[in-house]
Image (cartoon, rainbow, N blue to C red; front, side, top):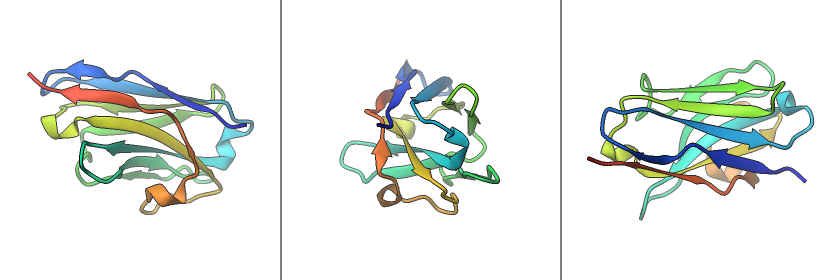
Length: 125
């Protein structure tokens, strides 16, 4: 059974940085797209970033472009989300998710069936 475990969340001041990690227990992770979503209180789950299976093309949501960088290490079954210049509006629970053979054109949470438990990020002074 596929399992995803996020880590790296915490409290950070505005303008600070955090790096989230997602450990995946998956054979042939390169066959899967990996995505990061976030959900703030009272809001819908939002696609933050996604790396496609196959060509590895990367999607970023408009609100994080230029500030967040997503990467994946298929050999170590890991994905990372480097978050810089954090803003209070980035406060949310961040989840990683995977889907086999998926192109990250504009990822929707309903496209993904396997999720981690989430890690909380709070940006506050």
